[in-house]
Length: 369
Image (tube, rainbow, N blue to C red; front, side):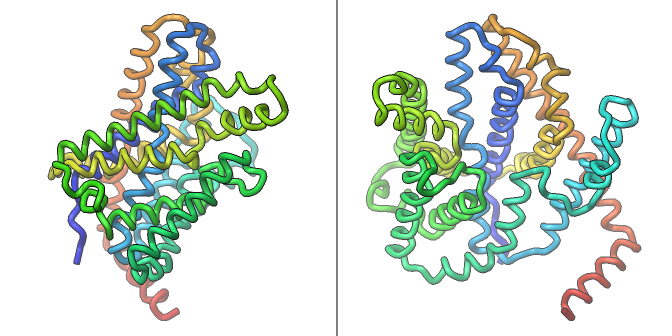
């Protein structure tokens, strides 16, 4: 049976992609480094800490839906084809207008259809999706107590221990495959055992439940930012506090940070507490991955924020915050339009008789193997 998509989770994809754009502008655009207004710098830092849920939330919703879904090989090819298309188009345009100059080896690498190293998220996501049937086979046999115990143990191993030890005992910077697997498992758990039906929240009204989730989200942001902000004060006290301060500072902005994981789950549950059904939201959410592939392309990342005068020297005025929000909206809209046109083009190609024959022969060959 096909899962009915709750548009609230599709809305979460849209919000998360917008947060990713803001995050990339602040980080890749070197906004905080260039900011010489202390008040404005604090605002950008807080916004940065609030956006940290974006990657985890995408993986959470994948686990939430995929635990009850079957593996579809065409989804892998759709992701790879979109990536290949944008790598070729962006490189080709920038070469034609003489914006970039690259060697032949780079051109060959970028032109290779299966090249997932350029996008770290795509690489982890595809591997996660490929092994999801095996993960599901194990998870569906777990009772609630076993499942919960496993998540707690993995939380300690993958999040708390790396945060405390600074990655010396076991390192997880949040960009790893096992981080994706863990967030996938949390999403699957929340599908099997909804938190709003648990002992702690089952008596709360939906509005109170939303307030609890948004409160947890904000508390995590506050605690994480406060610890991060004042970790420098521990560096020059003694050897022990210096290690603690360095570890806090190192893990503050990592997706594997304990606060960020809890914050991500709270964000996911808050959005999921809304009941929305909208074909427009669903369609816009389907454009999210293309928005990522365009604006975070290797070549675009090096040029975009200079073109938009983000990475353009010292920042003093509070108006720059409004400018960052405006640029984020523009990037989102422009990339969404481009991705919409790409999907139309690929749909046309997909429905060609030649394409259908190639697909038929390919899947017949695969089934025989």
